[in-house]
Length: 159
Image (cartoon, rainbow, N blue to C red):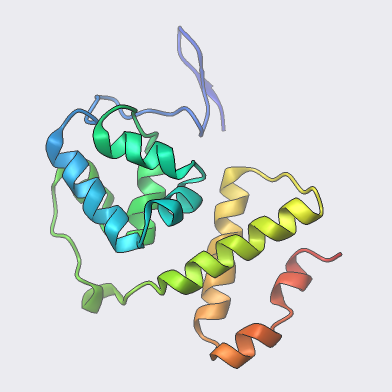
């Protein structure tokens, strides 16, 4: 979905927050905690569809994350968007929402990216995120042995 402002078009990849909270040290501390929950800057980058170096720039206040980047990281870490952006609302504990299996999420993202690259498939960030969520939901309920044998990805992205 694209909208326009007087200066430039706004797309999902460039949508910014109304105010610049990237210089807020509280935000940067919460972002650091969120990335730690995700497991690494590399994983956070995969989730947000940016390089790990960009995650570092966000944490250091040298770059402004888009709304969609902040939302993706908050969702992956199981924290509230308001908490991450503004420090509001209580941060849920893993016991409340259930922990994210970071290794499984990384495997899902890596497998999807390999498959998309292998078949030269280019999809929007939104569709990619939905595929990741769908795949994660499928695999999270399977035992390790069943995960290896699953043909779920093949059915989603046939050869």
